[in-house]
Figure 1: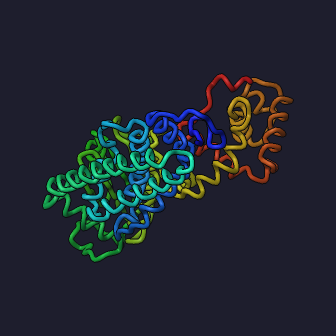
Figure 2: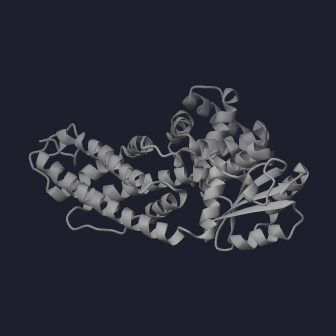
Figure 3: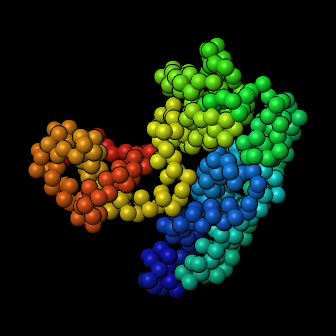
Length: 407
């Protein structure tokens, strides 16, 4: 019998225990973690909904939920028996977000079922390495976990609907969403000139978000449209007949954001099309803020990174083409990445990069040649992509240790 404890290509005489097989199966699936997440995410997005297809925040929450639920499912496979654990908080919040956004409960539950089917296929793909009875027991337990998740999702969904339905702010938010998606809506019901103003979209989140908005209201702007998403999240549009006025206010927000508030900013844009565009830009900037690298982010400063966060193919390509080859170095690529950052920051001046790093120029040039050899291309031909890959690496929280700088 093939043993997962020693690799699929080796055979042993002793049959492992069910507990050991659970651990081995979970480990085998974790080795395929990236592929599993992509397959499940694509699968659940195929369960389409008219609203969430165009909402970046909802899609980002969906991605985070997929990741958390996979970890939850793998832990269940590993532990088995009477194992139980709280439903991941990001999954609960995503159910609340679905209820607030008008995504149907049927869609939510169908996506849980789709995710379960795809994970089960990965489990069954290991059938040659495990006794069939063990796999059946594991699949039965996964089905019980699915029932638990779907029951909890249903309860949380109905509770959120009851909490938010019929409130004045909720109805207002729904009408603004209709305007954003181009569905039926009557702009005249708002005291805001959608077609005649320059707009700046702002998304503020945190326990003191309302303080920030009160500060905006006290400044000289023509119009202010506010939508309360929940107690700690606000959508704001600042409107003025002057592009410079909203641009200047956006600049001041970047420097004076209230402590305890995350701020994502779009770019000044005009008329109803601009009203929608600047909000979408703020949503994209919010993806950067949500990574915890900064309390304030404006779209133009991070548009390429935001694109990476929204495009799984682009993210995976940067990883495979640029980051994986660099990581093959004995130190995990830390010295190479640090050298490239210094080289780019000094506009390709090896001498200045060496001074920044505290090494000699020969060392920098040697590292650059090693990098080019590893990548199979000249740095000058892919500097933009390589720089983006490094920033993507840093955004994920995988920054290099300071001790590598002087290597």
